[in-house]
Image (cartoon, rainbow, N blue to C red; front, side, top):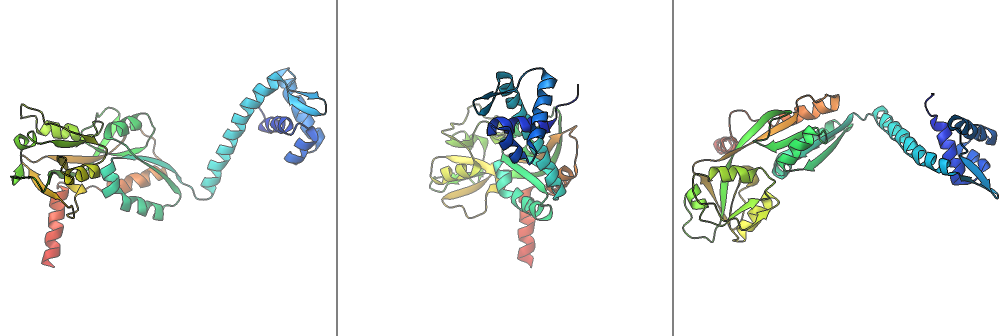
Length: 312
């Protein structure tokens, strides 16, 4: 059987919406006999009447209504295909979907995304803040193409490229007494400890760090973002352990302390190990891989930068 003719479906929809063959013909810029022929061909194909005249108006029969419902979906798909091809003709290179942790989006990605938007306006970027486990699931299920995550992640079906490692630090209300020079797990379990929501990756890292202590910390609240943790700590609601990346040295009512033993987190780029590539995806992947800082932590990199500036 020959494939359905979208022009015939378009004529059927126009006739029923206009309630007239002549009005539909004007709407479609066709002659009335041409529209009538297209409707008859559809009826001949399916062996049923699709329209009927009630008084002076044309209405769809029950099978006609069902066909129109399907026809609208077919015609919308045709319009979508036209739009995609039109975008390619106008320089559109494709769509790339990125998942990212909130801290990476806030502190790492803006310059990368700005450069991509400037240099490659034909790439359509969709960026979504997601906890690491949700990004990993999104990659496996092809809902997103690339993701910036905090390790560790379940490695199944994933290609993982570490980008950088950074120290975690404690942020403590400056109003507290007897703040130590370095925060140990023994000190942390005795304090009200603020943490991210349980779907994030960092609570697991922190709990692993303090596992040497037999007692668990008291967690008075879980908050959605690292910025919220800093604000809550500044409001004297508890201490928090956060990545060094989120500190800019201008925090008020807070004292920063290193951890002993040190705790670090690694940020990585993940993608499906069998993901089909494209020009747009290759460009975005290369831009994200440029974030890589091999064999050193952000803290050491920043210290070196400050030292170089001081010497100048």
